[in-house]
Length: 149
Length: 188
Ligand SMILES: [Zn+2]
Image (cartoon, rainbow over all chains, first blue to last red; front, top):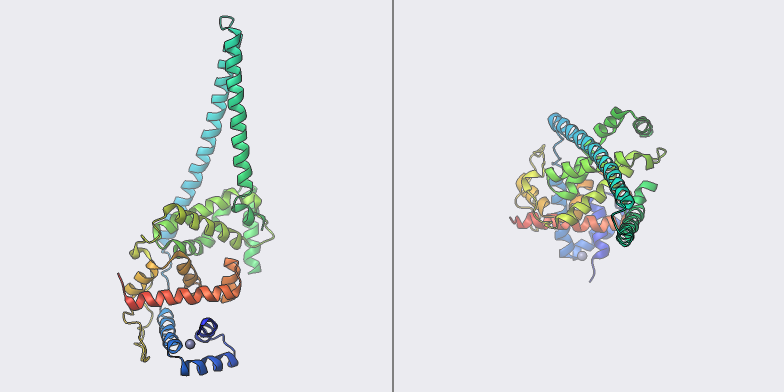
């Protein structure tokens, strides 16, 4: 015998949201079903216990510490963004200068220049492709749903 | 409720226009709720602090994508919930909660021992409840938290979790059953 239906009824009766008809039906059922009767008793005990218990509120100190820590982390995040932007700019500029020196240097053979340029071009294409993939994935990640709400 | 949403929207508009302090209003208003939501899923205080802060940071960074015509908290709660479950997935040791961290206030009145003919909840103490809660699955604890500590109706929980009421009832049934069984066993 399945009790699935009576489990929902039990819940409604315990939580006081059952209709009179549902209540009658459930009470009639537990007269003949010991399993549901015991369970009903246990659920009611749990309700009694839970009604006497509440979570502690955060203390003023805890809230203040929370806010402080949050703003520190926000600030650090900004720091990282500036640092990365700066580093990318410097590296890009440095790299550009190096390559320029290399290309205009008449002592280096043309073959070597072409080889190095091809390797660099390959690296750039790969990098752009990876970045595109990352950005694409981000657009469709699990956060996109709540953002569109 | 409308006033609160209007106030939130105003604070968000100010934040977006560069007023850094405006976001503090939002944080102050929702710290407690965010922390508790995270606590239900994660089961310990430190992780709940960290992950709920992550959620505020994530919300702050994505604020320009938030539609100010809608209430802030549901949007934020989705971010927070995703972060909580991602965190658990990364942590993997899902059962390793520190029971001391699940804070429960002392009962306001001593609960009376039951006179039911069947088995009663023997150890009706804060410790036993703490212990039992700390051993529930995150999903069970989340719904228990919403139902008992946030006092939300089936309907509200269904809205927050984005599932039908019938599913909420089934989950609540099993979550309470698990909680009750843990308390009966009083296992360590
Ligand atoms: Zn039955």
